[in-house]
Image (cartoon, rainbow, N blue to C red; front, side, top):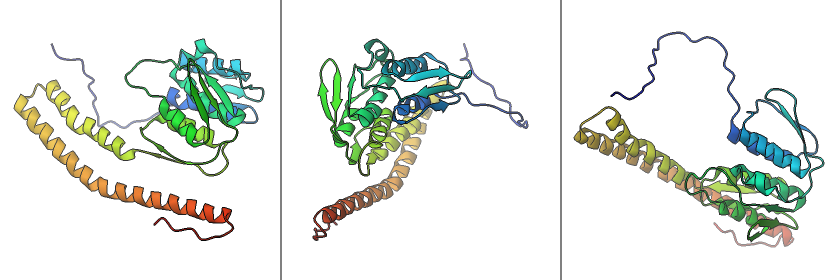
Length: 272
């Protein structure tokens, strides 16, 4: 029995207007970031789905004013937000409850988080969030709840050991309330290599199965894709490594300059 398929007939001019629907993973950190604002925030093209409604409910429990002013437009007024513990039942519904850590820490210097919920789709670490916030000066206590506290946040160089989108968002929101400059680096090379591995080695097997190719043809296709990917990796590895070295040196020189300024201009050895 043939597999279901989409058949696209091209060669025809396209006309008309399309309004892209709002994206959940884009709007949830935006809603969390409203805590950093000093007045009402109107957000448009917001999808009215359960996760969004749950995030809005969490903000309301913290003291924010929330009002839907249109079908997909919501206004959040964070001026009355208080440093309360997040509602455990609401936090257990969505993974994105962890996104409130950064802005609450930046605004109030403390936050207590229940364990976040959400779908179980494999290994989903949260220590990346805490390690990044610790680099900014937060103290993290782990128990039945996660308690984060910081007398003051200071800008820092943060290296994220995994490509965590929400971890990066938390670090950036917390950095808004930090004194000084924060630079976040992610393991981009690993992301590129992993993505290339998936697309160029794993996918030929799936394509071969879909086209009912002979196993030998699938093997040849996979080897060819792997060789091509390996050549691309070799080409990219050198400039990426060079860029990482230059960035590290620039950051080190910046720290030396800061140390000289604090010491009244006393020369300090250049790390290069």
